[in-house]
Image (cartoon, rainbow, N blue to C red; front, side, top):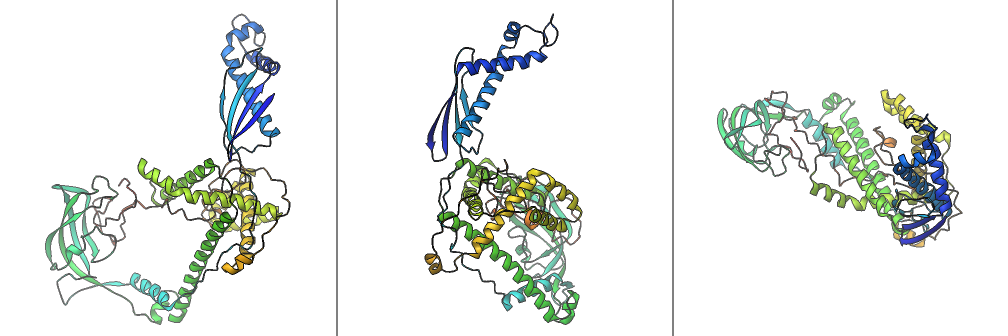
Amino acid sequence: MQVQVEKTGPTQRKVVVTVPAKDVDAAFDKILREVGKSAQLPGFRQGKVPRGLLEAHYGDQLKREVKNELVSSGLSSAIHDHTLTPITSPKIESGTPARGGDFSFTAEIEIRPEIELKQYKGLLVPPVETPVSDAEIGAELQKMRTQAAQLVPVTLRDVVQAGDVVLMDYEAHAGGVPVKGGKADNALIEIGGDGYLPGFSDGLLGAKVPSEREIAVDFPADYTVKELAGQKATFKVKVKELKHKELPAEDDDFAKDMGAESLQALRDQIQKSILADKTRAAEHERRNKLFKALADANPFDMPPSMVKAQAERMIANAAMRVKQLTGRELQLSDDELGKLRADSAADAELQVRSGMLLIEVAQAESMQVTAKEIEAEIEAMASMAGNEAPRLRAYYAAPENRSYLEYRLLEDKAIKLLLDHAAKTPEEAAAAPKVTPRPKAAKAPAPEHGHPHDHDHEHAAAHAHAHPATEAHDHGHDHAHAEAHDHRHDHAHDHGHDHDHGHDHAHGHRSAKKGKG
């Protein structure tokens, strides 16, 4: 067998394989014997059909199977002999094999890039400060008081002002026709509150109680009910009662109602909560900065297919989160999907690069993950999984899924090493010596595909794991280009009052994407 390998790009190879006639004939004989064992033709017992009749009757099938056999075995040998590491299925072009002649085929493959680590210690990853100010604590206290507010009737005036809460009935009409889902009785509307159609709550300013009026509004162009998007409508409203929010005093009694011993204890709890949130955000930010610094310091040619596949996974994960949040499929037009892919490309490339480099770092540092560490991680996840713990353990009992977890833990070790040795200032980074990696350990076989988990905890979020020969791990990067928009209409302002339909069009919450109502 003759093999020619041509470099057609940084990570592209054209492999031309020629199989000699004697091997082609041997393949025909092998396939013919296999077909003959089960062949049935009138007048002959199973397995006793003469060879000539077999070739005449099953000729096309024989040629197809011989071609598959020759391509499979020939390409496998070529990949092994020339130390190629394909990352995608090859594109095959070939003719039809025939007895007595050579058979040639061409395979276009994309291979894993060669990566040479230049520097991974002393990368510039500045610390992120996480101070908590009195103003932030006060703002959170104010939110808590607002949530605990009581609605009290307004008795000294009968004209609607900003900040009031109006009890009212309303019905929407568009083009002279009632809007489906646009009617509500005894709805509570906060004047100046968030989430209403533009101009709706402001249209109540100055109204007397009781009274009736009409309010003209425009449905936004990206309104989630497509039939109403961009349409003009009129709301006929009946103002019935006027209320205002009465906030509880900021004192020890309020703190006790919130489950704290005193106001100071409540402030301390808030401070700890804000600090924990900021610390998590800071860690996330430092990791992202680390991935960028690692990729910048160690450039290599990136296979386009890996970036494209990662971008598709990011979009699929975002769509899955939308469905989990809303129960609805993410609806995107072709233009929106194309823009989403383009916007996701840079993030996808960074994820692929950093994922592959982290594995290189782990190998350079001879890092390993023990069976005990894997078990400990599974138990940590199971402890947070509640009733799902048995399913989680069963999931990671499968060798393939256990392998994904092993690679993720290996990456975590590499990340910790890099952050522990990161430079805090540009001066430290400039002074950091270039590191000559130790000889790499032999690469372990990588799983074929990234696999999104469906367990919602820190170490088993819906991420696509990075594996050295295939795909990149989602290292906690924010998939900001594929937001999990909630396409449901918000009934938070309904306060238990009945609506004729499931959509509250006065509370016209908009989605950033056009979706079905």
